[in-house]
Image 1 (cartoon, one colour):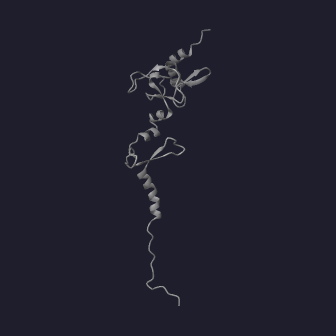
Image 2 (tube, helix red, strand yellow):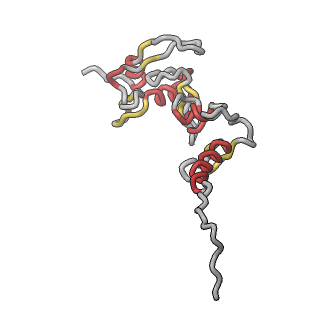
Image 3 (tube, one colour):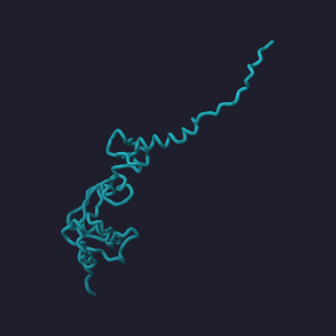
Length: 171
């Protein structure tokens, strides 16, 4: 019986060369599509369990990823396992570099009504439990949102018609 291949040899045999993404100088090393998890990241069988393929490749080439850090795909290709396309960053940085809703809102310079979100006088930052780093809210839009229901409550009251006769006084 032939000796089984080492994990490094098995890893190298699974990757294929992909295109060179914009802004990168080297091509992606792509993991096969039949070995991806539900989020599109590669899975590699090692020591009786699956590990993220990009993490294994990075750790083999550059050493362990620091505590509290995760690997950001600079090429934005989840299947890519090229170590020079991966950057260890904290979770917040990884999310803000992405194309998700949080990142889009963080990059936004104006609110939906055109108010400047870079001016601290215009922006209120609240810290609800769901957003420990804070969330921006436009003060002018918030004022308008609360004003609309109040205008109905403070609507002028119609004058009741009064009789032309003076009130009767007690005799």
